[in-house]
Length: 204
Image 1: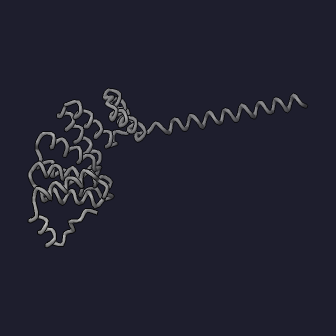
Image 2 (image 1 turned 60 degrees about the vertical axis):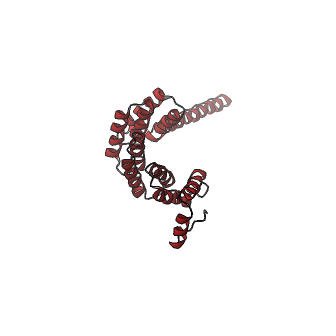
């Protein structure tokens, strides 16, 4: 009787461990997703491991060739390598996958800005802002728009862009210092006009 009980216990133990093994395998499979592979690629890209990042991005595309972030990641990768032609090609492919994915427009804007085509960059930033319904990238978009407008010497428009960034993120130190710099450059007349137009000149 005792031997039967021991045998039964061993069978149950084997079944339990077998079930745990199955669950573990299922969990591992669940990590094999475009999102997980892209997160890995992004981490590698941030660390400067370009070859490994490229492999992870290509793996992401194999898992889902409609996944727009992977194409934006490839655009950034080629841009950092100095291959602007491929960077442009991939950002266009990203738009073909998801035209409303805001980083498509932000990446295009950066490519234009790097080439000194600031007017085109401004258009891309404004398009990014208009498509960002949930305002997930709004702070970044407004701040980069402000910097680009400054390069065009459109200081008043740059001021407005920086103020939008500050309204969304009052602790954005770079935007705050940019506003202060523009106030000093444009002088008292600009501040008086802001007051006259009932535009609050006090930083939040």
